[in-house]
Image (spheres, rainbow, N blue to C red):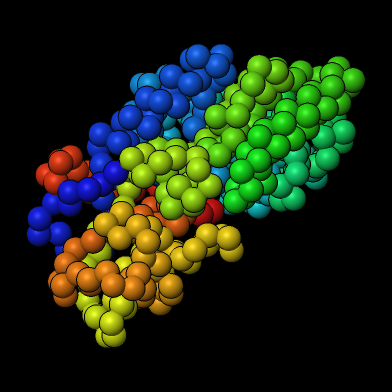
Length: 364
């Protein structure tokens, strides 16, 4: 956890503890080796070439991304094996971009409809490398993805359009819940859905060699079975949400926002200079507040405005002085990273470097 902040910071700024970051990356990589699964981390959490390089050197087989522009940014930084884990709907511009990307890197793309795979096939026809397709199935999160039994139908449409279908993927988003048993149930839901999807593909004579799932909350609940690849993302940093559901401890929090106390308008209330334009406004309804203050673990960030974070301190706890710089761990780390130009890398209160968020705002 970032306990010592460098002196003289211009706040707000995202600060990463280099030691905790490296430890988190190494721990997940070791879990992959021990558990016998391929690790393809989701880069949407960090969007940073330096962190991508650390993950690949630790043993990741490639990276997952959410958008074409994330893929383009990481490809430009030298990452040459990417999975767009998203059911792309290609317009003319995105089709041209996807074709150019397929000429440069080993590329997988997600799909969950026959209409989408036909557009995909048209886009990549004649590319230098053959694009692989994974059919997305819904394992209970209620987001994108077809029912597992219908995976073969989408896969067959992709194959008929000339695409190379290699398997299926899913996202166990229902594991993000305060119920202690949610992670275990979500992991089992994922296994059942991917096993059924694989059978649906094989019934049509299609390959199901890649069955990809996983998230940071469910990664530790993986067991031997159909799922061969996991795509956790938040684990590199962790955040207040992961702390609340027990996925990590406070010692595993690698990223914070360094923020200054700008106001103490009433007893027990203070205001910080990191609002929703820095932290984002994403918050789970069952988590108290909009972030976690390591120095004041029982304090609550009660409200965010664009440039204000209002904090309520427990009764009897002295407020920090005006001008004090505090570490504030975001509720959900992916949004603050997407809003930042750079990450300040520190160790023991000393600034080591600043890393550009290469895919900042890469939402298309």
